Every structure is written in C-alpha cells, then in structure tokens.
Image (cartoon, rainbow, N blue to C red; front, side):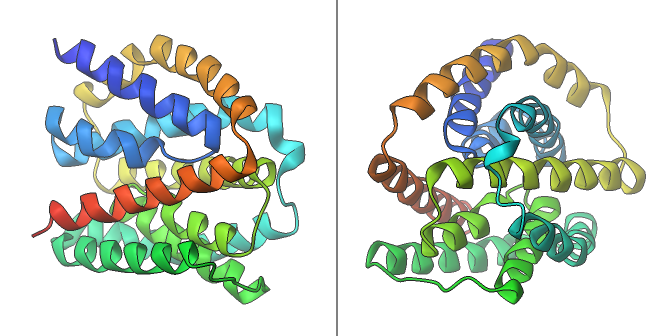
Length: 237
C-alpha cells in the first residue's frame, strides 16, 4: 500500500516538475512526510529531483539563461551551508513560518503585477536563498519562481534555468547530507522503486509543457506558490 501511495506522489510531482521546471519538492514533500521520517522524506525528494534534472537538462539546456545561471550558483554557495546548519541543529518551525509568510506576501504582490528589475546582485540573492532552502527544507524553488515571475521570464527559459540550477544545488545538498548526516536503506529503496514511475511522469510532463500557454504557465506558478506558502504555514502553527 505504501508503494502505491509513493508511486502516485512521484507520478504527479514528476509530471509537474517536467512540465514546468519546478514543483516536485513542493508537491511531493508534504505527502512524503506522511509516509516517511522527515529527514528520509527530504533525502528521497532530493535524490529524485537530481534524477529528473539530470534527464531533462540534457534535452533543454539550450533554453537556460546562461548569463544568470552562474550568478545563481555562486549565490547558492553561500546559502547551502547555512541551510545545512538549520537541517542538522535547529528546529525549523520558525523558519517555515517566516518563509511561508514571505512567499504568500510576495506572490500576492506578483498577482497585483509587481515588477522586479533584474540585476546581478538580485541573481546572487535569489540563488543564495534557494541554496539555503534546498538544504534546510528541501524546497529551493519558491525564491526562483518569485524572482523569475517578477522579471517576466518566458516559460521555456524559466523551466530550463530552474532545472539546470536544481541539478547543481540538489547534488551538492545531498553530498553534504551524506557526509554530515548519513542516509539509510529506506531512502534508497524508496528512490530506486520510484524510477519506473518517474519515467512515466517525465513523458506526461513533456506533454503538459507543450499544452501550457504562457498565461496558464504563469497562473499555475502563482497557484503553486500559494499552495507552498499555505502548506508551510498550516503545518507550522
């Protein structure tokens, strides 16, 4: 029964991730936490996200923003170890409340047509916050979604840039967790057993991406951000 529920979670989350470039951790993590210990759920999420990004990046890497991507990665170098400290030492309840409120506030501002002017320091800041959230909560996507939506990035470039960034950040995050925290058999069995379902979700996600207009893509982005903010807030109070 647990495998069936795991398969459904992975299929839906993978379809969303491949179709939009984001959403696996946002959709999968809340439900994985119902099946597994918190640290195990985050590690399963990271492993599967690395696999998805690795498969997709080679297909769509030409669409990535090659000027912005190095800045995002540089910023993440500062954020990843700080997030790791939260993961290992601190109760992240306060962090989840703070992040949820910020996500909801900024998403509503974006829905009111808030525009953000791109700059190198904002690229670095977005990458840093994403790196921090990747190791602390397993959710690097929201800061990039808010930033990219604010600057009006097209859906093709957004998907490829986020997947390229996620491949680097998730890989580094998992290596750090292996070294500093370790892993276990449950994480690897769940991850390996999910690979066939992940392949199916990748196929469905490609179809979804072709069907989404820019307007629907933007609307879906806002809905996912609101869901993320609400989930983090509700589970923290």
